[in-house]
Each structure stands twice: as C-alpha cells, then as structure tokens.
Length: 341
Image (cartoon, rainbow, N blue to C red; front, side, top):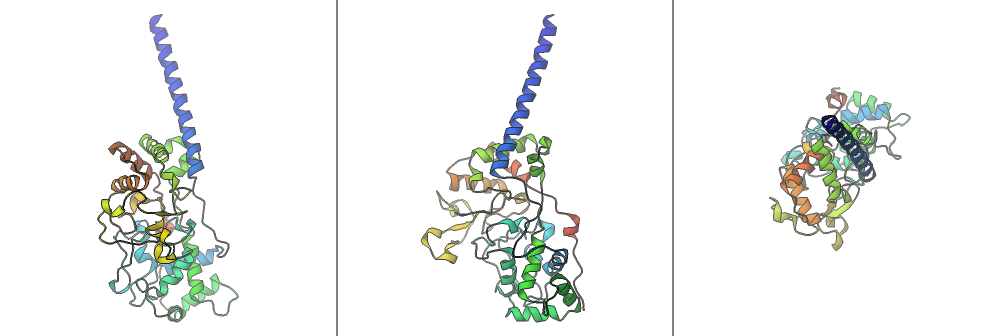
C-alpha cells in the first residue's frame, strides 16, 4: 500500500512538474512575442512595391560586377549569401582593394531596419544600393550615368529592366537599379527555430536556448535588441557605461553617427544591429574587432548594461542567439547567370 501511495505521489509530482514546465514555456513565448515577435514573410515598401520581375532583376544585379570601376565589386562581394550575407572580414574591401570604413553587416532581414549602414547615413536598402554605385570605397563609378550606360550596353539587361519597369521609355536608371536590388533584398527573410517557438512549437528550442532567451530578456538585452529583427530599430551609444575600446582589439576611434549629424549627443552612436543569424556573421561590432560571439555578449553586457555575466549566462545567451539562425532558401543561394550580350 505504501509503495502504491509513493508511486502515485511520484506520478502526480511528475505531472505537476510537466504542467508547470508547460506553463513556463507559454509564459516565455508570451514575453518573447511582446518584446521581439516572429519575422514577417517579407519586408515590403510602399515606395518600392515588390513584383516578381523586379525581384528577378534585382537578384541578377546583386551579382553584377561590371558596373564597378575595376570590374570586381558587386553587392555579393561584401554580402555573399553563402556566408549569411556578410563577408567575414573586419572591414569590407571595395574596388581596387580599398577598405571600407566599417564592418559589413548581413543583408539578410536588413530591409526592415530604420536605416542602412552602421551610422544610418542611408535611409533604406534602395538608398544604400544606389549610393554604393558611386561610393569611393564601394563600386567607385565616376557617375550614375556611367553605370547606366554599362547596363544599357547589354540586350538582356534592356529586356529585364523593361519587364521590371514596364511602360517606361528608358527604364535603365540608377534609381531603378536601386529599386530592383532593394526588391530582391526585401525578400531575404530567414525564419528560424525561434520563430517556430513563438508560434507554439515548444520543442523548437532546446532547454539551453529557452534558458538563454529568459536570460536575454531578464538582463535587459531586448531593451535595444527589440522587435522581430532583434535589433535594427534604434540608435544607441556604443559604450554607455565604459569605452568599448577598453575590451576590444579596436585600433581607432569611430565617432559614429556624429559623422552624419555633427551633434555632440551622437558621438559614438550607432544603429543597434540585427541579431538574426548573428551566430554566422563574425567578426562583431562596427569595426569587426571581436571574433567570438560569447566575447561580444560579455562586452555588450558590461559596457551597455553595467552587468558582469557569468560564464554560464554567456553560454545560455549564445545558445539562444543560435536559435536565431535561419535557413537560406536554395533558390536564394542559386547564383544567376549574368547577361553576356
């Protein structure tokens, strides 16, 4: 009889524990949904409506190098999709091996941000694509007209632009180049196990990842890394409590958004980066000064929140961040043939 009672008590305890655990999962889902939320299916723009023809053209142009001054630079050079759309370098390298001023962030899930570039000096992915054509460390073309003439010299581009922008006498323009590339980039969303978890699939996250999500929220990381892109929605001083260079390999001081606004309050201010696919896009920070994700997590907690994380807390948070790694569709990874005539 005592054995039966003991067994019954154990079963009841197990069932209660399971119920409590399920409840905590639901609470965590609710809390994460409120602070973060699942990715949208795409990142549309009223100014640049998505069409199949525009996206098709944009993907081809994403790989086009012949509109750079030395014939080596394309969007894919600094944002190779096979490397989760980041080049793995501390700072991107443009035409004639010219270094860019900052690390190249991933273009995946990037069109949903408040702006492009670390300091917000490009208002959108379309603006970024257009200005890159004549950017000295980027494509480096002498003028937009030079890029337009090069594209117009290919019959296939004349057809592709005509299909993407029907009813226009001269559709090959820098603005339409930017719209096409922007349209392609607005489709580059990568739903991850985290999104499945938010939709109710409790087993989509491992127990360490759930613990890491809880820690991420408890420590205040989502104060800045908020929204469905887990960042990209605000500007913030890098080094709120201590200079970031104290903990990194940074060899120079970057004044950040001050370069754009010339306002003292914008010294060392940068756009909060998107953490989607962060596990795959080292090195980290605007200057690429940190190689390992765990180190970046610890540094951010220290200089932004004034918190010294334990080794276990860092491990937990990095486990959660791994759940933000999505799958890039095979069609996106398929490299197109460029026009030859």
